[in-house]
Image (cartoon, rainbow, N blue to C red; front, side, top):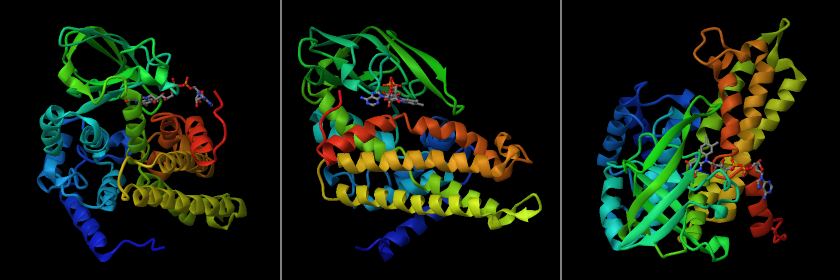
Length: 393
Ligand SMILES: Cc1cc2nc3c(=O)[nH]c(=O)nc-3n(C[C@H](O)[C@H](O)[C@H](O)COP(=O)(O)OP(=O)(O)OC[C@H]3O[C@@H](n4cnc5c(N)ncnc54)[C@H](O)[C@@H]3O)c2cc1C
């Protein structure tokens, strides 16, 4: 088994890093936005993505038929991780989740309408699965879609819809058959976010960024904007979630925060003694460094499995997401403990150790263990799909 990248892959990474150096600007790249840095939510971030599009870096793995390059997933991985390391906007949502699901299941009309716009970065999406009574159990979603003429009338509520305050299109699951078993009565739609029947209300998170509640009041969606087959939406959503669990919870920020913590331990003193000589600190750092390597390899396993074709690998996605996001929390806990009282100073405070990222990531990393399916749900998936254990609910 070879864990190293080939010369061609390394050259690609160098090219990406050079491009990022050329476009380094605080309006485009901001590591302290943590995982929300991936959003393409401001004009400078959109302009930056357009430049990436001109390079052909969106749709690296897509079929040539839809403007892609049919390249290996490892290039997409290298690109996304380099972007994440700088706090730059990323390709996970439009090109990854929406684009790849449309390629597999969308009608020819939807492919022709959306895929070229995705590749040119001319459209942003919000994703609406979660509802107040349907979070971990997404199949319990109740937002209702009722057939009317050549389309559907949607009424109900979504919650935790990130990006709904700036995106143009809404990727929404709705109940089309209330009498069918819950996993078989959901259909996926694309809805215009400027529809007058939609009301978007921001919700602040403990990670300083916002997500949204969205209310649907008689929103009409033409049947042509139904994604895939009627009542098969939950199957498509499950596939899309496997992609989300990998591409939207990147590894390089964890590695970067570990490096920051190690630098701190290497150079600082506590009570007149170098931190690096404290056996408890050393043991904790050694354990975290080893776990960071495990997270990296779990990510590579997902990439390797994905490159075999078909839908994204479910178990590998859950294993990676569970391990990486829980590790991210442990690194943040260690930074706050080892950094002492000063580690509670906010980011951008001059005196704060580790540039104040300890305090911020202590709050933010909790969010990553919930979004895209909470840790307990990932454990359930691994227990059932990998270990063959019975369903617990
Ligand atoms: C910042 C942020 C952004 C988000 N963005 C989006 C978005 O853009 N689009 C979207 O659709 N959703 C989004 N979500 C929603 C996210 O997917 C849900 O929060 C998540 O699925 C958990 O659902 P819940 O909050 O309703 O918690 P619940 O489902 O109520 O879970 C509460 C607790 O119970 C545990 N639990 C639940 N069921 C089980 C079980 N069967 N076995 C063991 N434990 C269980 C959970 O793990 C959790 O610890 C976002 C969430 C956050 C925090």
